[in-house]
Image (cartoon, rainbow, N blue to C red):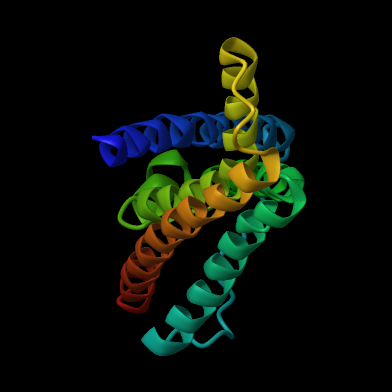
Length: 193
């Protein structure tokens, strides 16, 4: 019974950083889009014709880029969430700006059609990585609120933070699996064009 209650509390505590991560993503995409809205379309393609478009080259490129970003978002575990907030916010701006630029160049429908098979998975994986980076500080903040209500001081803040890192690592592992799947789909899609 105690173990299932702990899982329920962990699930509830994971919801807060997940929602915060989604809010950062939405705000960043909106601001990134708004900043690019007035930029005229250049007509240039998004892909450089001189790059290697083989499946393995593309897969390694997407894995390095997205897993590197996921680890950067996860670094919030070491910084109390600060590095996650900053890097995720900047990445969300980039996502909004680049999609807006692509839509201005080739049209919204063509830009959306070119990413629809992999972008949702890729973004979900990145959101989960940001969630993992924000989880320990969220757990401490939740426990602080609970302590004020109950007067319970049996578990310290550092212990709460360190215990939350275990959950963060699990969330990161799920994020990595999703990011790898998205990279395989993205590399396959682009190499078949």
